[in-house]
Amino acid sequence: MTIRLLPAAAALSLLLASAACGDSSGGPSSPAGNDGRGPVTVATGKDLTQTVQRLVAAWNDGHPKERVRLVELPEDGDQARQQLVQNMQIKSDAYDVVRLDAVWTAEFAARRWILPLPDGLVDASSFVPAALETGKYRGRLYAAPWLTGTGVLYYREDLLAKAGVKSPPKTWAELRDACAKVRRTADGEGVDCYAGQYGKYEGLTVNYSEAVQSAGGEVFDSSGRPRVNTPQAKAGLRFLVDAFENGTIPQKAITFKEEEGRRAFQEGHLVFHRNWAYAYALAAEKDGSKVAGKFGVAPIPGEGGPGSGTLGGNNLAVSAFSKHQATARDFIAHIVGPAVQHEYGRAQSFPLSLAALYGDPEMIKRYPYLPVLRQGMDKARPRPVVVRYNEVSAAVQEHVTAALTGRKPVDRAAEDLQKALAALAD
Image 1: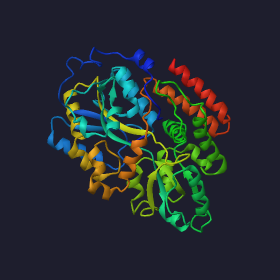
Image 2: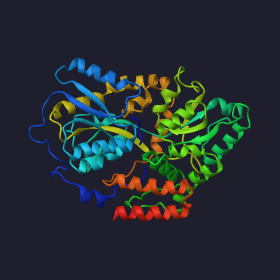
Image 3: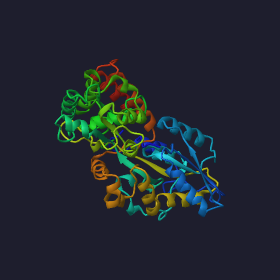
Image 4: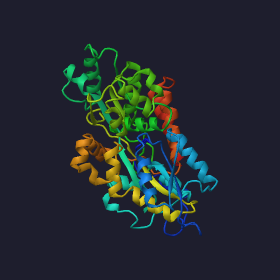
């Protein structure tokens, strides 16, 4: 469900070339006899807001012979990917439409697990350009962009005001200074400063990569070479390590994923919290949040100014093993189309892929963070388009965790990670 969405640079072309397969047009054709119509199953994330259920119910009312059934994958992104991979490896037709983290497109397309979408199925010009690119592999659109966005900084407006802090921090130093001032107030006593996602899973890769980028570094350069042992990249890792050591980030956050951090912020235990836009609507609920009406949203801070986030997103693709691919394609076109995206956008705060929503006055009134989010998306970087991305992410998690828990100094962790990533790029 959530968008979990490692930034970095360009594709590791050698890896892509070695894993790519398909017809001369760059992708597999629909398996014979599978381009039919009928009921379809959509494998998606957890629908916390129940909005997708309502959208599916509306489709089913109009398509009684082509009904859609939702199957929710595990909330943990790594577990969700593993379940999809296992399904594809046995060529199961259990899923017709699969919801993919934007970074999985290359792997699933190269392994012929999903099919390229026909030209004209969706209006490519209607999407946020960066979101559209995450659905492409070798120049063809394999997955229609549905959700997009980047990490943003949630902050307690009320606590900052009482501490005399007039605006949210643009730098890490300003963030630490603001927390110190808040903690000197009666209302800020005992409130932790900052947290993101630091459990040993994909979210750690994202948060590490954002720290590297926000210090002026990059995880991979434009040629696909790892660059994690540069002074800038090590400064990003050092910010995270120092933050755990000096209490800017509480020790308990070493296990945080999106939901643990969201709940901590929502319950009033954090001054600042890095998360995706989905958390906005939940934190704003008057009946379920202690910070409703008391928080704002800003771009994530960086070393010398506003930081650079990771471009996240979830896209929809047609399984190559579906027996009802015509219906699957039609449902994807329906769900990412303007009418349904507007309806979905009004009901929840997931950032959607339709560009027009970010300038829609009604949407901005409902979700004031949208201009901030679009600003952050303009500075965000995509994760690397690599077939072996899961191994890249696992290497990042291993060595960054070692640094955060004090098992390795920053320089050693950066050197070891550089070697691990270089081996994957060979």
